[in-house]
Length: 433
Image (cartoon, rainbow, N blue to C red; front, side):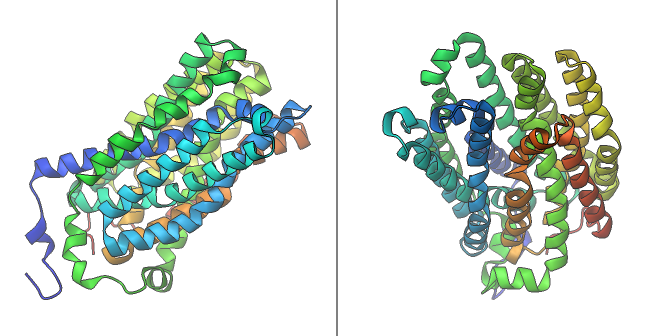
């Protein structure tokens, strides 16, 4: 044991303990994201109940804007929770983020509607979203750092891909709950109490998620660096690792835009623009999420053997080429069959990029500032380009009259992602600093 702390070899734990820790982090991550994601599926109902008005389109815009307002807090959460994770440890950061998320969920679950308390109702919804946004600001970085530092060097892509896979598990669960509710409840029951059910189920995050994360062991890499903690993680990260942070920013732009537009917003898009039944659109989204859960893991596994860059570049370039033709194919003759076809292709491209991307980002920065650097790259990109992505495409459709407006937004993000990956080094399998 050195004067600055134990070596990584001295704190490496057995394989079974590693798998248990990774599984616990993944389950907590899925629970954390469930309620954050499920809001997007019920944005139209929430807009009607909390932002009453004569124009349904305007209500939807306000509901989506409230979804996006939580992203204003993402950068603040990134800075505070990123530094906290680099100073106090990955376990402490992950436990704090999930505790805060529970508070935000509770506010939304029990908020009275506008008809009951007037202007206080939308204020409560906004407060709940802000708390959720602050919490989510630390989740991606904490889970990614935790998984990358527990993983074996030659399997880091696969281990870290569970982070993204677990997000799609949350999307799948949210979509399934939405399908069950919309198929079994009348519109009146949905507006009265049904929309609260998904959020109430999310309160299981409290006793389950916090218990799981409190039982996690700290990562070997963090323990080995405990005596070399950065005095100013954010200052060091921005000064010495601005290139990886900027490259990660570009990668996340593509990942978050494609996810929030092509996965989360697609059910609303299909039902409102093309009059497909909402329950069927949600079922198609659930099928897409299920596919993404598996494909993200496959993509992470593949990049451990061929490197991160080849697959990431293939995915982003593929999206540049295919996003407009696929949405045009659907718009020409809208149907559930065509929706399933384009979602399957999108799922392959999104998984091939978002599955291994976090591992590549984690490998480019050292342990002492990894949590902070990842949090900055991810959350500033998500706040700017992801949170209001759905709002932007709805606004574009309404102002231009072009139902293919979502394709332009995703196309631009895919070009940015391609450039970012091309300019970054590939450290697949290299030891973490």
